[in-house]
Amino acid sequence: MEASIERIFTPDMVELAGRFFQVDAGKPVKLGDAENYVFEVYRDGTPYILRLTHQSHRAKDQVLAELKWMEYLQDKGCAVPRVLHSRNQNLVEVVKGLDGSEFHCCLFEKAPGARVKLSDGNHKGDLFYVWGKTIGQQHQITKDYIPGHYRRMDWHEEELLDAAYYQADAPEQVLRQQEAIIRKLKDLPVHRDNFGLIHSDIHQGNFHYHEGKIYVFDFDDCSNHWFASDLAIPLYYLIWSLEREGVANLNGYAATFMKEFIRGYEAENELSREDYEAIPLFLKVRDLTLYNFFYKKYDWKKEDRQWNEAVRTIEKRIIENRPIVHIDLDVALR
Image (spheres, helix red, strand yellow):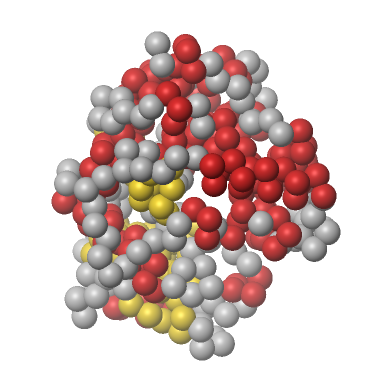
């Protein structure tokens, strides 16, 4: 979390949010604080997930748009956590930071199961197939979704697409590649069968695997985007995590993943060859947004060498205009 947000956040705010949703937040377990404060809390021995989002990250209407879509997906049979109402029958309650600014609070059921560690070799084809099938189901179901009053942002409103916003001295080569990426995105076709509201972050850290089923959570990044982006992001983070663990033959691992992943996806939804061919572009987009995320969140004079090397590796890929991994679509779509 940015230092400016940390300075105005207190444990008392978590307790107050808990009272709104009638859960015990006196001794919360912090699960994350990258973009939101996320805690495990309890009611009558049952765990729930309490999230507090600062207004600088998401406006209240944006949070409501996310929660309304989650409700729709669950109503249509998707495995996503149930969003719970407060004692006032609201999906979102507000608590104030020390400076008077707002944090938007909401409560979710905790997804069953646990995260998976892919490098241990225990999960491969079966998980990859279900992973793709889960995303395909969301895309197919969302084609008929009508957002109503609350709407999520469009892809071009993403501030993480602008390196200059976070670095006054951003490398010129990065800025040139950023412009080229955005031009290519603007040239992509947009229609009902390849574009819509997507999760935007279904990597292995944002779902639990339980009894052969994937339960997706953390919809905070959902946006109106190309479906192919939702396919690129799981591949990106899979390869990024394996790369940092020193796993060899990443192209081979990507081929294994994509073959089963796309087979699962096409059990629920299909894209054109042209849409699949955009996946390498979206891998580059994720390099760019992750690179900018690190500059947004961290003071690199204080960060350790490992993270500095990770960012320099991403920067080098951006400048060289190459994706994190190469995929053979002829093999993946066979």
